[in-house]
Image 1 (cartoon, one colour):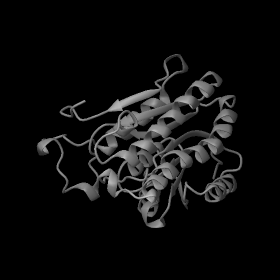
Image 2 (cartoon, one colour):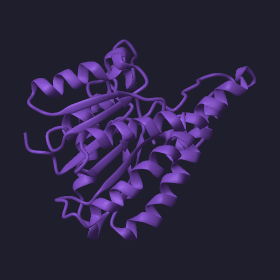
Image 3 (tube, helix red, strand yellow):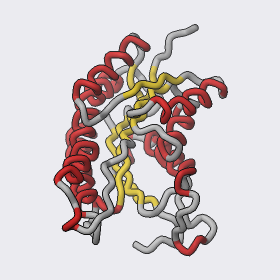
Image 4 (spheres, one colour):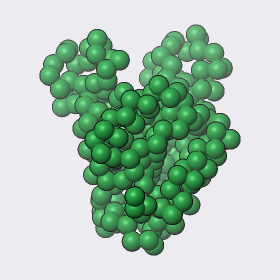
Length: 248
């Protein structure tokens, strides 16, 4: 087997957005899939392998720096000569939907740990690898994409903890885009404004249950691939995605 020249990493691989992103990027690269539980990434690894792609699943807690270190050490052993083409941070960001007076400090800690600290650890690991890929002749600019939410733009009732983590996440991503864009690495933040059509959320109704009232995970993945393939002359730093009937 010929060793891969480039590979991709997706964090937060489950049955929704992460799975769709992993499957699509696996059409172009071998992919490393990171999630806390093996049960989250195992079906995706199997699907990619059956389709003729290459995928490696690694149990990782992105809020734990040592766990992130171990994951990247495993990836380096897996593809020692390859360069990182694309990294996607899609980790579940400590979602809490509670009245403010019912929130516990642990709710805020979880939102900050996964939304901001996890991205901080992940970016410190991926950015040197993406910079190293800039001069290696990749077909597309090396890319870091972060999955955001409307809560990154404004707080709302019962979203205090979640919004705090997302505000911090967006601030980190904006700073990275300004620092590393001029060095050839595309850093983009996606604002997912609406309910996502996931298997576990089939019974949840959005926008009155109209057709396409939820965001398709495959459509999100298409947008991520578009961001990755943008030329350097036209980088997008933030991309809003919402169903056609969603208020904004």
